Every structure is written in C-alpha cells, then in structure tokens.
Length: 92
Image (cartoon, rainbow, N blue to C red; front, side, top):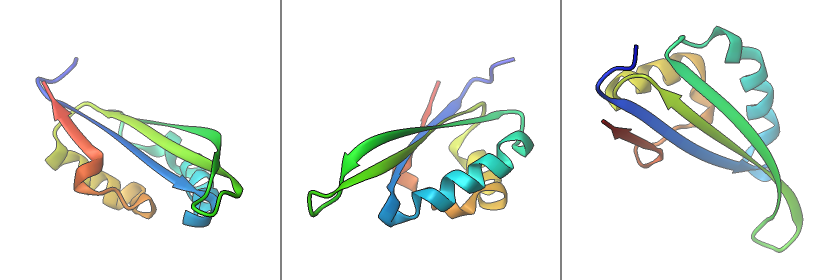
C-alpha cells in the first residue's frame, strides 16, 4: 500500500568524496533496509573540478513515508551517505 506521502532523494558523490566506500556500504546494507525504502546506485563517468576523469556514484531513492520518517532510518542504516535536508523531497 502506498501512503499519502512519499519521499525521494538523490545524492551524488565522486571518488574523491568517498564514492567507493559508499557503494561498498550500500552493497552490505541494501538487503537489510526497511521494506519501505528502496535505494539504487548508478555509476557514471564524470570529471572532477580539475577536469580529471573520475566516477560519480548517484544514490536515488524512493521511501514510502515522510521526510521526517526517512531521516532516522537513514541515520541508523546508512548515515555514511550524509543525507542533507535539501537532498530530500516529500510529495503526495
């Protein structure tokens, strides 16, 4: 059942911002996340601020609940992502 409000987020990190550790963490916790939370990761080539080639990991999510409910779940299960207020969007 889909609740009245859902929350999405998108957070991108490059290799210099710790993308490798974040993807490893995601691989280890994804199957244990709350059933209302879906997180996928996409890896794409990118350039850093100096123009050097790098990889960017983008974590996209759909949460069947409010922004207020999502934050504590993320703090417990995947706080390494450092999800910010501006990364989350709640919609009905």
